Length: 111
Length: 118
Image (cartoon, rainbow over all chains, first blue to last red):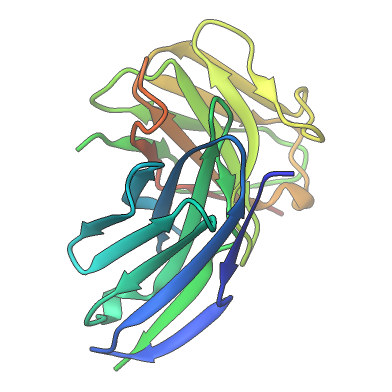
């Protein structure tokens, strides 16, 4: 069964600190992995998309990594800001199939 | 960048009435749009895949007669919640991808619609 797990479930950090969110998946055949940011009461916004051959991709202060061998991905946020408070969702696409969503990590950045 | 617009953002309706939610791709054509439902503190759950010019494909457990989907053009899909009940209260989100896009094509989400049935 295709599944995506994320950890931690929630995270609280102080403004300016870095953090790393984890995503493990059992999806086959693998096509791509995406990270989305979802503010409360809003739709998800894309941060990164990685295919099998990519092992890192950055978008400003967000850096995603992908290890296709261990089926793990991480999202690193540098110098966090209050506006980074949101849910971060890992989404994996099996080839030719619909998205498989992770449960998300809820990040709170405190002043 | 491409934008998907969803309307309305919030709606409150009485039990037994119907509510229509619109999803528009503003600057690209989308042969396929997706409708999701999200309960508090949970991730998105796919309800149905909307195909332009043909019937929608519903996920298991989603009542097609209750959640009517119409995808009449390459830029507009609508979801109508018929005979709404309080348990239908949820956050509904649509998504669209470029027509004919590759597997790793960007997928854009609407702003979501908060439906409250009283």
